Amino acid sequence: MKKNFSELIQSNKILLADGAMGTELFRKGLKYGDCPEEFNLIHPEIIKEITESYLEAGADIIQTNTFGASPLKLADYNLDDKYIGINSSGVRIAKEVIGNSAFISASVGPCGKILEPYGDISASQMKENYRKQIEILIQEGADIICIETMTDFNEALIVLEVSKTISDKIPVIASMVFEKSENGYFTIMGNSIVDSLSSLIKNGADMIGSNCGYGILSMISIAEEFRKFTKHPLIIKSNAGLPHYENNILKYSETPDYMAEKIKSLIDINVNIIGGCCGTTPEYIKSFRKVIDSFLKNSKS
Amino acid sequence: MKIFENISESIKTADEISALSFVNKAISDGIPAAVILNDGLICGMNIVGELFAKRIIFLPDVLMSAKIMKKCIEILKPYLAEENFTYKAKIVIGTVKGDLHDIGKNLIGIMLNGAGFKVIDLGNNVSSEKFVETAISEGASIIGLSALLTTTMSGMKEVINILSEKNINDIKVIIGGAPVTKNYALEIGADGYGYDAANAVQLVKNLLNLN
Image (spheres, each protein chain N blue to C red):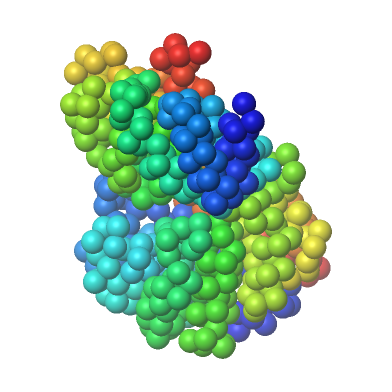
């Protein structure tokens, strides 16, 4: 039975998130150049299948297929006029499959535009863009808003503010992508880990963290960096390494067993939600489940 | 010459007023526009690229410098035309099919353009056929492919396959983007891999024997 998400996180329980949506969609027939989120409307059965597979794998938190479903992002596919249907069916499909067996986390990814003065979109335009999307996600009953793959914390802050304005009760996760440089970890926009986490926490993010990236080892050191500065609830969702070709098939370098072994380090540094990003499948999540369960069992006894 | 240092420095620090006034001064001093471009603007943009590669500065800084560089080139354009300035080579760039990320690709475009190449930017979500068709019709020497998603990288291989099906050997393919690695470039038979924008410029020069 589903409990209160915020309480669970505060109690330092470790929750398992699901794995990738995008790479799963490609495995199940999404063609290059097609809009992944349009599948909510034209192939709900595939979204349902993926959601079911993550539920069966044992995920406590399952994401909706709404990562690129803000109107600005959908406009790249000339689908911005369908944003209402895409977002509402995204949550509905997840609800139909999950019911109360897991938390429904509404994924919100970058809108693809850079804020002024560097780019050409104003903060108020960006706010309006996300307001449209998130209003639907919350109305349809998402349990969590998960802002992810962000490279500019100002954009993440806008999504955070919009979400909390629509509902002050909705838990919001804010997850960013960092790359390693000689001077430490930064996003491509120049946000350091400490600057990102302090501004996000200050503005009310219930959970912070990092997703995507270059593989589990770099995600462990990113998590360590976060933990140097804060005890705030932390989420880490790693790619299964970087992809390469094997006999004409795109393969990710890290196996479920390898990653599962490494996520013990994430548990050791008190990461609260562990999940997968690009390249991870239900098989990975099953392996993570075993590691987390054995930790939870041992910590009880 | 001091004026080139001034231009380059004001591109580096993204000081628009100084950049424009130094460029105007250089023109009124009778310095050829191509020289102002090469020794001032491109030089400044190269420094920006190097600093970005080391992540001493970040994308916002590069975008600001690039905006100012563009404005300076606008001033130079009529003079460049008068001088019959020719580009070193034509390069077709774009983000592969299914991928809508264009920040990295735009950056490469800015750097290549700054380095004296004619850049034909096809934008994002570009089909593999379009890359090849455009490169042929424009007489480009190189196709530059960008991908930011691990899921769209396959498009790069497709472009290379089409070129080899058509037996085209004189158009080189270079690739780059966050998930792309040197090994991946080797695997799919690309002619080169650029790990960042500055490196991509060097790569293009190497491939075209322009060093």
